[in-house]
Each structure stands twice: as C-alpha cells, then as structure tokens.
Length: 466
Image 1 (cartoon, one colour):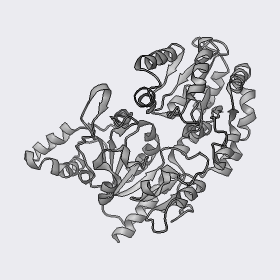
Image 2 (cartoon, rainbow, N blue to C red):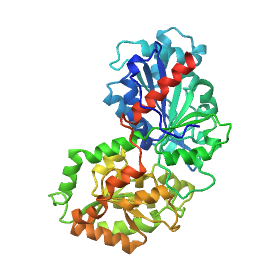
Image 3 (cartoon, rainbow, N blue to C red):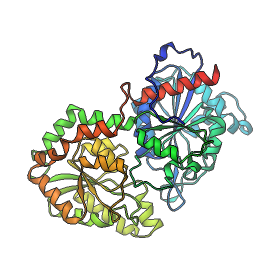
Image 4 (cartoon, one colour):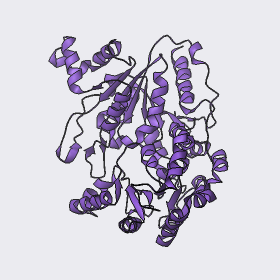
C-alpha cells in the first residue's frame, strides 16, 4: 500500500491515451457532493474523460431510502454545466429511437448511454447527468428499485464518498460495482475521533472491493492502512482533499474578508451586536459525541432573547433518527422546532457547506467533520465538547488549537458574548495560529488535489492497457 504522496502530475497532454476513460461519480448524499464536484470539473477539462454524475437514494436509520439532497445537487450541477438531467423516461425515449424492443430495453441502457455521449447536441459532450431512481413513496421516501446498474454505465472508474454498501440499493453494492469498474473512495468526511481498533470508514469489510483510497493527509492514510490486511488490493494515495482546497480558496477570497468586516457592523436587517450563529450538531443525538440535546434549546433561548440569530443546519439523517428511529421527537414537535428556528434565524438545508458558512458569523459544531471544515473556512469556530472528553484523535486535537472549546453551557454563552462585544479581537486569539496549524496538519499539493487524482488515474490506465 502506498502511504506517501504520489509524484507531481505529468503533462497529461503528452500521455499516450487514444481511448476515452469513463468515470461515474456516485452521489447519494447531497452534503458530500462538494467533495466530488471539483474532481468532476477537472476531469471534464480533459478530453480523454467521459463523466457520468449519478444521483441515487440512500438508506437511513429506519431502513427506508431517501433522496438526501442528491437530486438537488444533480440539478444544480447540470444547470451550471448547461447539461440536461437525464431520467428513466429519457433513456426509454432513446431506446425507442434506436428501435430497441421492450424486452431488450433494460439490457440496452449501456448502448443508450454510449449513444448519448456521441450526440453533438449537448453543450458539454463528455458529461451525462443522470437521475438513477424513479420510485416515490410516502413522505418523500424511495424504495430500493433503481433502474440503472453498474453494467449500464460501463465505467472504468466509479467514485463514491461513502464506502457503506448497506446504504445503497443492492444493485450498487461494492461487489457488483467492482465487477465492472475500479472503485475509488474520496472521503465524505474527516476522521477526527479518538483512535479505535475498528475505524468503520476504513474497515477492511467496507473497503475490500475498492482499488483506490484518495486520502487527505498522511495521518489518515496511515490509519486507513492499519485497518487493511497484508493481502489487500487497496492502494492508498495521499492526494490532499478537493473540499479542503475549496474551503481554503473560500477563506482567502476577497468576498469572505468583506463578510468578516460586515459582521462587525450592524445593518438594517440585523440588530446591533446580534451575531449569526450556525449550529451543526451530529445526527446520532444519543451518542456521547452529539451535543444536539445539550445546546439546541440554549441557543434557541439566546435567539429568542435577540442576542443571536440562530442558523441551524440539520444533518440529512437527523429527522429520520429523532422522529422515526429513536422517537425522541414526534413529527409535531419536529415541526414546532423547525418553526422556532425559522422565526429566530434560518433553517439551513443547503447542500453546500460553503454557502452555509458564508451566511454566518460564528460556526458551532461538535465532534464531526463539520468542525474541521469550519476551521478551514476561516470563520470563528466553537467546538462543543461531548460527554466523552477524550473524544478526538491527536490530529484533530492539533486542529482544535485554532478553535474555541466549550465544555459546558457557560463556556458557550461566554464565547458568544465575547464575539458580540468584540468580534475581531476575540477571533484574532485563534486566527493567529491558523497558518502554522495548516502547515503542520494538512497536505495541499502544489498542483491541487484534483489534478493529483487525475494523474493517478491516467497512470493507472496506461499500466492497465499498455
């Protein structure tokens, strides 16, 4: 297994590849699309690649399938790329145009997809955006009947952000994908928990069918490598993280700096000294790591007292977990909670974390990937510590030096009061450490994470088909 960064990308224009490389980006969770989108953009700039962006449903705690923002992200991306969203009806129409009979239709979607790539009417001729499911059920849930399969897409590579086959329809289990495509794992989150013997996201059971893991840092590569047996076929490459790159670019943008300055000056919309606080708790609220039950009511009271504007960003699994799975809330209580937030701030369901961050002055999270993303965004970040105090690993602990740590309600209220009184001076005590934390704990390839990944695939294709 490779645990060191790969060499800098070659000039891909000189590589001897005369065929098309087809890549599927399997997206079943809207919040993770920002981890894949920059890679898709980079591949689309190279004429060697054909890209399929596939939106799929995901299984949640109650064992039902939901569209967790995947279709919304697909539509947004397709609009951005001036590309239509392809549905089952569209594929069936092309079947009719190709005079494929009804009995052979399902077996011939691969032929249809090839035909769509060859059509010159598309603005983006090497991109297909496909909605991979069409069965609706009550309460916006989906059943597991999907009409598209890995053999329909016939891709050389399939990228996912979550390695959990059990959350996908059976036809898209990793063992089925691996028959057709090489599986590539780009992490949907950032592993920050205290080290355990069994790290679920890196477990051998979850990664046994994967060919590549593109790891954000050497630390994460080492943790992942330790979970694999010696006979593992998984290759781990330290490539940095496209989402990290995007967050750093956001933090360094002139627009972000202007937003920081604007937060110091009350406007006609916000009351004087009323800061916008974005709260992003873990969805497993009965876990010791989640602070949802500890601080949600407190922050709502602060908002109702006009001391803050509360922006609440619910995890896509939160509603199903608290209402259907654990029954911590009834649907009526959930609706009331949502209404309270909307009356005193913003209920933020944007799939884009950067969009959510841009609308807030202070970011609050417990032990989750959002904590790391919040730090990278350049916004003041408060870490609400869970009941289990030794809950982060040493890598995350180093990053937390750039955050404010609230061990209880009094700590949280004190930090918010300090930000109201002197936002800039309060933030500077942590912001001054930022550059050194980035230097010591993150990996940013000179050519960017996405180009590094592209180079790995090009080299792999040359070795495979030479």
